[in-house]
Image (cartoon, rainbow, N blue to C red; front, side):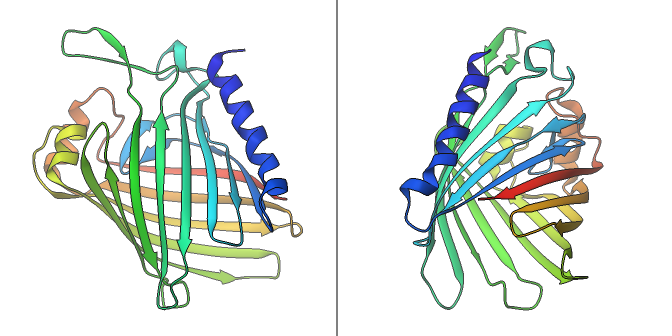
Amino acid sequence: MKRASRMMIAVLCMAALLPATLQAAEANLDLPVNSAYIWRGQVLNDEPVFQPSVTVSAENGLSFNTWANWNLTDSLGESTKNDFNEIDLTVSYDIPVEVVDVTVGVAEYTYPNQTAEDVEGTAFALPSTRDFFVSVGKEDLPLSPSASVYYDFEAVDAFYGLASISHSIEATKELTLDASLSVGIGDSDYNEYYFGTDDIALNDGNARIGATYAFNESITVSGFAMYTVLLDSDIRDAAKENDAYFNKGDILSGGVSLGYTF
């Protein structure tokens, strides 16, 4: 078994045991299979991926999350097929504020089994990096508006922001339908690092619809469809020219997931 697989199994086991160590904690396991891996408008893989995650949340507002990406094909090379090529660890805290919902946190992004090439064609391991983020929102307002700002303070030293609105309805006691719209913006350093365009810009727009069916209080199955488009013409052109991305300007993706709460 490869090192990344052992690492992921160990993290999942630790996360599963955290409810016993945190007072009044709850754990959520999600097992989604998606048609593509899309991150902040960047299509990092346009073929199917498995993206499991475990979130452990305590009543005091503290949460731990482990997320990973497993490529189900060799679209990124044989070294990334059937193994994890990204593992992210996140710690967040819900600040007790009455007016709005405020969450702060830090995330670490690691890339085992994933390489890139420099301008001379020499392969190198992708460096890990870290984000600090702040999210604000209000679920009981119309369309549940929210906004998040991420600051990469290690590899990129840049800001990315995301604003969204969403709405959900209970079609039946078991079935919930939801829809959301979001737009992302990157500062000049962010866009220079990822796209080679030294401008602040509206990066990506996303329209998403989904449905969740609850079999009981613990087990759910869900699905979604999402349309993603790169909004800025310079970023769109740069993404098309970058072999590390699969962007063609826009993409329709979707997925299904099994969820378990314990």
